[in-house]
Image (tube, rainbow, N blue to C red; front, side, top):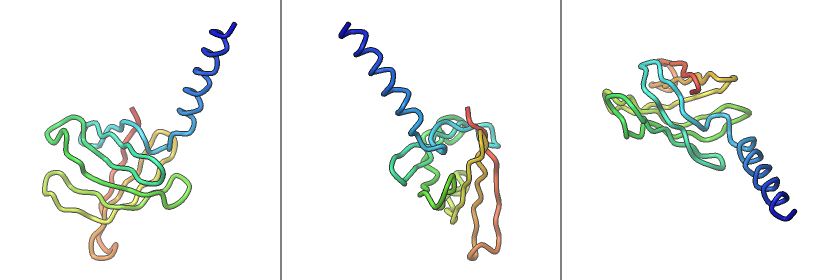
Length: 114
């Protein structure tokens, strides 16, 4: 009896932990075809490339700025230039943009959750 209760409690906690995960956390397929992992906790998240030419490189950090919205910095792994960034999650899509000159010039990408 105790074993059944313990297993049920463990399953509930695992499912609750998954439900509490922020929508931005997880593995994402970039437009270039690489896999990027977004991890963190609280209101701070980091982005690290997990596959492709720049695997292992940290390319960004974001903080929560609203419901499924984030602000921070994003680095172009090709040039190592860092830009002000914004991101928003909608379902299995992550729209990201990086800007220079106070937002005058921006480029964006859409990533998809794996």
